[in-house]
Image (cartoon, rainbow, N blue to C red; front, side, top):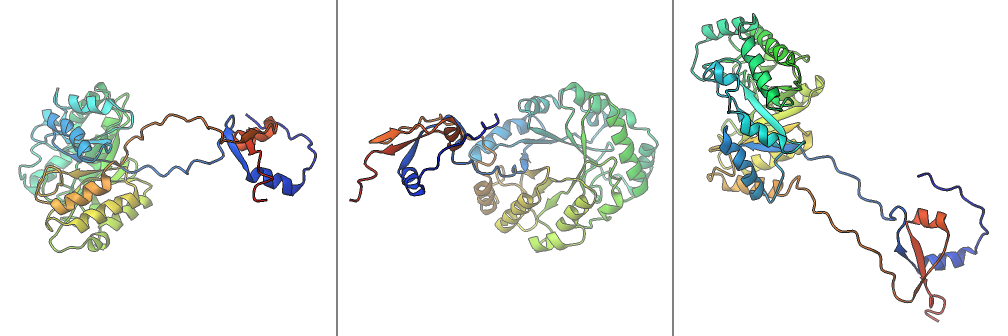
Amino acid sequence: MAPQKRRARSRRPVAVLAAVLASAALVSGSGPAVAQPPEPTPADPAFGAYLDYGPRGVARIARLSEWLGGAELRVGHTYLPGDRWSNIEGAPGFLDVWADWRREKDDRMLVLNVPMLERNEEGVPDDEVRALLQRGAAGEFDHHFRALAERLVKLQVPDSVIVLGWEMNGITYTHRCGPDPEAWKAYWNRIVTTMRAVPGQRFRFDFTPTRGKDAVPWTECYPGDDTVDVVGMDSYDQPTGLTFDEQVKEPLGLQAHVDFAKAHGKPVSYPEWGLFRNGDNPEYMRRMLAWMDEHKPLYNTLTDYCPHGVWQCRQNPRASEVYRSILTGRGEEPTPTEPTTPVPPSNCTPLNLGEWVEHWIGGRLCVRLDWWSRGR
């Protein structure tokens, strides 16, 4: 409501008015409060942890939240098995429990790692990988990803974050980029185009290499801004002896990652991170959490099994304490409090200063009757 027009009023002696206000108290509110609420702080980055790929992973989210003093884990993270195409399509029953968890709250996020090829961890040789990537780029495997997209839409999780072909710059997976980067990029673009063509989808596609050079520079695998929504990075505390500052500054390290994402207008993410070659390293844990607070990723999910984790893994007690102390209670909804009615102090007589004044000061003033004689 717009304030009423100011009416002409006779001037009062400044000294008297100051004395009245100095001895007055606000006893009832009918307008805006005098004390202004604090400025809202930016939302903390959404976080979660990889706890298991199946129903046990969903069940453990609530238990980890309890361990963190009620902190709100807004991210659920799982992986599709990459053994055969039927599982990469999202076999019936596998994703249902994750979809149920996601739909319970509007601000939750389902992060799904999706392999680009079957037999994804079977040590397929480079020449065969090259041929498979070229077949994928030609459209031979489109129907598998269309089936996955349709299943996610049917499960009412059309806004899932798809971590497609993760750690492509390494040598672990069949869906690696190294044997044919051009075919890999063309194949990625084909998968994204196929999944985006499914009615009702709102997927976000996360391009996630490992930190550093690895087998090939991950920038050589980047498929382009049109098909990438998020630039992620899997970043573990390795190799042995590498400090956190060196992890930041190394070629294609943490700083290069955020700089690259900014140059391309994309948010960052950390789908996998945690302890590794340097053991129970509380300094890494402290610095990595601070790094993410500073750079505000779309989300992060700690890999919580040994040797990387802090809750399900007991071999990292010092880092576990750091993680728990920093994240305890984070994102927890505040308990609402009942509004209180102001009680006038004793020996205080309410003053009728008019609606306009009471509107702008937030209520009615009262004044002690003995203010003039006090101290005489």
